[in-house]
Length: 508
Image (tube, rainbow, N blue to C red; front, side):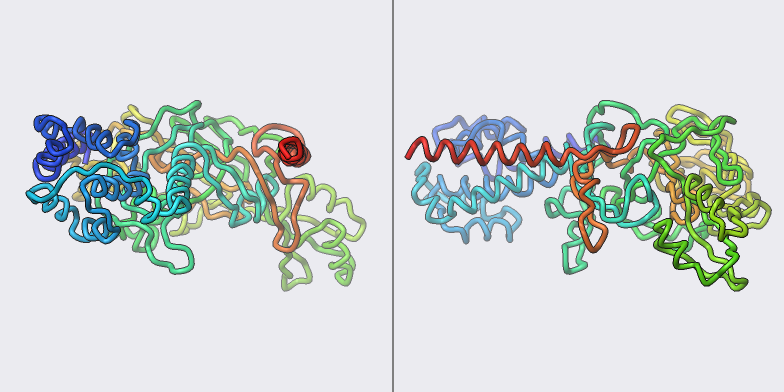
């Protein structure tokens, strides 16, 4: 569905509601009958009849938020026409609005206006406050800022397991929810139940509000995991997928190492962009597996404690395998008990089906990978047996076209062609924990319509046993050692409660 179709559906629905629900009730409320038949405008009139501000109408059209507002408006609309019991609202919902049709054509229905005291008896002020708090929080959560917790070690050193983030939706432009029938402020399942928190249909077309900036190389990005819809194993191109809406796919966080239009290659673990070694931010500490051979293997625990290494795997030859960044590796190499230290790098040459593009033509490894081109909106590529492994899934799943192939012949929207022009940008997302990260090397490109936002702030951090106060209220981006602004927050709380106490004593 595109937005032209969506607007047409909204206009048609508005007109039908005007005929079936508003036509007689508007007259009884002192309005003109013709107002009921003007699409969209009739909603504004209905909101005016219940005595609410005009901007409530806009909230009705905000995905997810509109679900809550619709129930509130139905209750108040029935109220002003004398149907004041909560069961009438429930009946309207259960009959998918048919009860409102009955109310509209019932000759005994009369406009009686608002009775605020009766409303408070039916719906307490606490309930009203909670409803509108949920509406406000959902708007903030959807269009401005949302919380996110780091679940894995793929960005270790930069972001740790147990970091609680605020993710900005407005930096790259907030994506309008594509799944409108969903519970507010939960993702893909109802907490504690495992049940879906949404209905797969209807689906709204993709749209994104203007952003403050574009995704830059080495930005840390939260996105919906593209491979979350795969039903079959990677590399199986049978086309059998389990559908999951884009905005309900699992949230991932990785570093964007290459942007649309780039050509990326990994050589012995180092990333090259357009032929040049990529320069990482100073806070980024890429990690690799190292094999350490000790002179005295009985001192292994001493070594691990000295360098605060939490995980180590023993080798069969008396060595240990640990995950280190380059700086720590240099320090350990100089330890007098270390006989040798070797970075574990997987060479090219042996086909691994789990590695994208899952094709024997490209026997790449996670440490020696590419070169690979990042598709860019408006760029045209040639489709052939060499390039189709990279673009097959993009055409089937992300580009909104009908794609079929017969040998080395390719058909897009039913027409044979060997060219394709991309409709959106694609990015390459990887973890800093290079050999312990499920990232784009396994499942490929991330389309821009899957991008959620940019992590900007760590508001709390917990290592599983105790708080890491040094990370509380620190920024995600920037250079140099992160600085905690916890003291600023604490001072703000002291000043706020101190002022409230002062006002209380002064008024006593």
